[in-house]
Length: 124
Image (cartoon, rainbow, N blue to C red):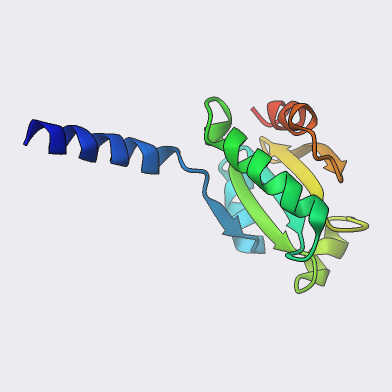
């Protein structure tokens, strides 16, 4: 019984540390910014090889303190053209970070762990 309790506790802790991505909506973005939450907006496309290389890096970093406080909002490059345009993003694989309601950094096409981590540091 003690082993089961330990296992359940470990699973609960793991679930709490898994990076959660939300689809981008203007309402979600506005709420996060008004609350002063650190936010990463990732403009991606399912067919994009660069986006596919970025995803596991972002996921791994957002599971680690101090980056676990950052909320990930994903913009679909193909279906959310109005958002892509309003963010002034020229193509998919753009990453933009916000802190205290202000944009504090962006990158385009970066697939290096160091580069993405340096971007995330700006949000915390």
